[in-house]
Amino acid sequence: MLERKTTFTLIAILIVLFGAIGFTYFYLNARIKEAIHHQPIIISENERRIYTPPVPDELDFCGEKVPMQDFDVRERIEREFLVNTYWHSASLLYLKRANRWFPIIEPILEANGIPDDFKYMAVAESGLINSVSPDGASGFWQFMESAAKRYGLEVSGEVDERYNVEKSTQAACDYLKEAKAKLGNWTLAGASYNYGVTGISKQMQRQNSRNYYNLYLNDETYRFVARIVALKEIFKDPKKYGFYFVEEELYPRIETNEFRVNYPIKDLVKFASENGINYKLLKIFNPWLRDNFLLNRARKTYIIKIPKSGVVKITEEG
Image (spheres, rainbow, N blue to C red):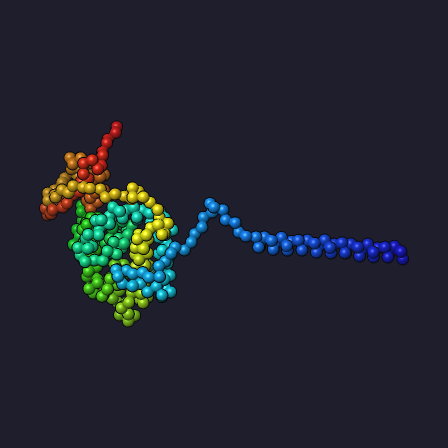
């Protein structure tokens, strides 16, 4: 009987002991979790923080108000601010190139009565380089071959004026004036540069609206005007969006001499050498020359640009 009582006593002591240990474990575990949960987050000075860039409540395109009170429009605009603010390398290159090319584009827009905002369309289209899209649109203004010819640009095996900044900018002006006359305002004209005048006209009729921001369109056209608006704001105040640079870091405009040529040039390599430069530079300053000769059977007058003496120094080694 005594042994049985002693056994029960030991069991009771063990139950109490294990219960105390279990309570202590769960209590301390809970307190540790609570302490961790309430501990303030310390961010090191070197830790990267990413914020939504400032999006103005009032925006316009070519003097035409952007309805920022429309949640869909605001979110589309914000998307382009985010993309172009945080795609650092691309946006920095755009800013650098603009210093070289905007002084050429701006006077042509002004002479044609085209709002200055459209210079940002060239940024949106090509990043201010003579790019080629997968479907064959080429140059700063991304003309397809058929459209280029319609607006007076020569496109052939040896000459492609889509790569001539002055001439392609004039062609873009001609398009925009025509589009604005047909569609009624500059915003719709800008959208049509991506979607086509016929396409925009059909959607206006189908949806019974003459307001670009009220039209239901494909995602690319949705983004097109929004991208131009966002680029315009970033270019106006780059530091506001985190882009810092000094004037010397921007690409300078390089002065050139212009040669009027109305005769065939059988060897453009030799022509370049005779004018103090190499073939590479000839092509850089005249990308519309598409081969190493210019037959010019029609005896048209072309302007070939040669960088001025002293601006570009050429040395040959080996």
